[in-house]
Amino acid sequence: GLWTGNPYTTGAGVLVAASPDVEVVGNTIEDSGACVIAMQQNRSSDGATFGPHMIANLNVHDNTCLVRLGRAGGAVQDTGDSAIFTSLNNRWQGNRYTIPSTTAAPFFWQNADRGWAAWQGYGQDTTGSVTP
Image (cartoon, rainbow, N blue to C red; front, side):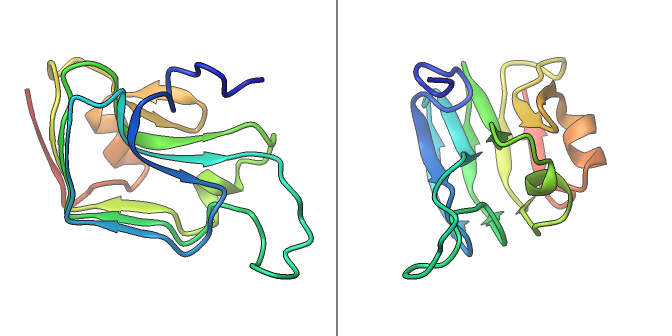
């Protein structure tokens, strides 16, 4: 399938998979394939027992990510619905990243690799920091 061996999710230090109302806070993640990644997949939509299977109201804040290879953070989806990026209140704030270089693009948002300036341009980690 799409996610088997996917470089955006493989080896994530924290992987949030189709789960709403998750908070990821206070972690130090070093040398994972990815730091904190949210993954939206097509899953059952009945939601009768545990609610809908979707990334919504994700709050990733005050983590330290030491990234030498791989991804620093972001979200991926295979549903064809961009709501995970635009209207479901998914946010990263106040995280501290060490990345390989200032020209690296270790963030994934809106279905593309993004650098620090673009990541912040989407409103993510406006209170965060990055150092090479």
